Image (cartoon, rainbow, N blue to C red):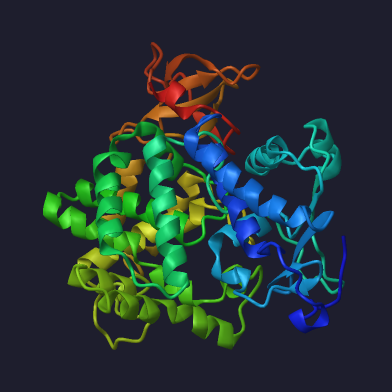
Length: 469
């Protein structure tokens, strides 16, 4: 679909009793999508959310044969009329649907709960097949729901549309941490105070479970083909900061403070319009100033929250400052706190290895080289060395190709020999494990038998737990 018109206001059309709340339906569908990707079919949480969504939809289609929801110019519209309520830019769940190319959802009378569940599953598994969306839904026996993308006639940018969260099978603890972080950042964006109890629970989950899950760490360390905005990025940076903190010998109490600070280092971005955060091109001076202000916004939010460690606000303020006391915000020639320096290393690596609307993800080995170039100027040299030693050029979870043509998943690294990890071979026909290879093995002349020649994009729906067992 294509439109160049603005949404009408509520005064253009009388409000009928029983009309649905379009924003509630969009949020319900987005929540159902995430639940179907996180939990097995038949899970009570899926059934409960499906029933809630079905009730919302049926309350409308009983009175009107078609429920037409469109997001036009940042406004959620019902039958072309703005709801007059909150803008979807304040809701991560709505942005999540938009990132999949869904701005329009039409639901017809006679829709079944199975169709709502199937559409949610389709949105979770969505990938380019060359077929129109309508044809793909028809193949799945969805007859009463259509999805579309609204394109303004003056579209200026042609960019890759990446999903905004991890896709495929997720480690349960990692999936739970993503959901908790999402709720935290959504609530903050809506103007609600931070819930310190939730923050403590999330920190505990990251330290006690996610950090010890090889599958979760593989999903964090390797290339990430999703636009990990704010909440996903923050969880990943917290885990990378924990990894670096342990590498340099921080004690447990300090590590807890570090994880809290890293988790909330970008909380100030909840006050920045999403269209600026995701802008696929150069920022103008006003936009750049606004982006840079997220450090001060974050510090303000955290200082107003009782129960957080004082260093958490300091890290939010300083994590973009260089070790020479430059960059933003302007704090004179003050050198950032060591904890801010740790988060800065993790932040840059994580940003590079995740996708952005304006760039593809960077391979881990290249990201390590970029960190090396920044060492001594922007980043602490000792911390960069420790970080690279901890993750190596081919971190756990990387999909690589050897000089013998073998496709493999890195399952173990060697700090003393970062270029020659241990691989589990991937059967290219079944995507199943097919034996292990130690790339550090040498022949009779002392030469390495194998070399890694390239890092590849992640393979969709590859079961990391099966490979890392």
